[in-house]
Image: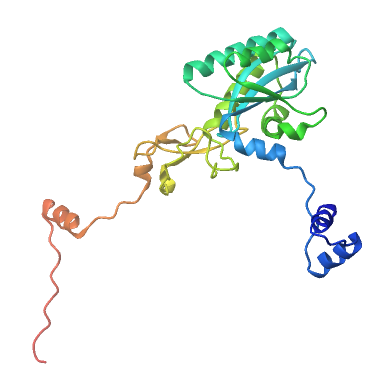
Length: 286
């Protein structure tokens, strides 16, 4: 409103704010949206080279203490990397995880420009210096603003709802094994709805469109003792055998009824020396 009034005053017209408001209402022009889009614009511009990171915890049924896990997620592909699991997270431990991550990125040839993290005390200047040495700028979120790191928080919610909240964790080694298996399922067998993902898994090929798969070539595999049951396509044209209740292995091809053609039926009749009975002739007189 003030901006319009200022523009009119520069042109020599003095108009009250109430008059401008009436004109806008009569023309059905909505008021401007005061929502700040700076952070959203930043995420969209650097989505392919952005690395959000965070911690989350899970309870141990043996020691009744919390176990902490650190991870990083590639924003562009939604690919998750499990960094480590520990019972006593410290700043030195987080810095060592940063070194191992940068070494891994250098070996694989991935290039990222920004790392998004919160203001946890475990993220020290030494942690930031490790990423600065490879050209990655560390971006801190605002205090008490978890939505600025929404992608990492969303993964925490997913891993808790689908994995850790539905299992009894016996220790640090057990949690690491469980999270590694869930991360593999997240990257290879779980579709995502992010921008540009098109309901693909992070490790799926972007330019490959799968043809419809026949039902007999689709198998369901078990992940995390049955917590997740994704479906996958059988690589070969032959379906693996199924085990019945009696313990016998039965091939699927034997369960299908086989229809004989007329040629097969005729060959089988000739092999046994059988002939079709002739139709008896009727006596004459008609």
